[in-house]
Length: 125
Image (tube, rainbow, N blue to C red):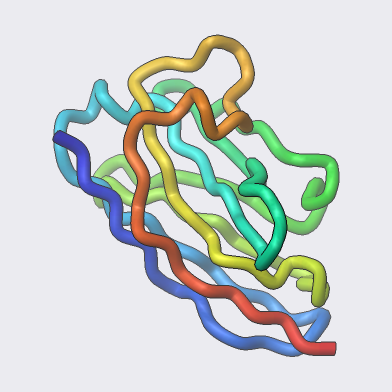
């Protein structure tokens, strides 16, 4: 079984930065792909960034390219999401997710088996 625990959310003004962390436990191979998703009130959950932890390949939604960076620290079993130049539209609950493999679309929530409880990010203008 894989457990994922997010942290690092909070409130920040537009233009600011936050770093989210996702601490993972359980079999490493069960979380070869790790992703960050977000869901704003009244909207569907959307993929923000993903990483293939084995080789470090990364994937980003167009809306966050150039502003967000996903990374992993294998020794700490932790995946990070560095968020810079935050905008009010980035306000959402952010979720960490993991899966042993991807069918080719690592930003789709349907590809993920394990989910964390989420951490709230609020960006004020």
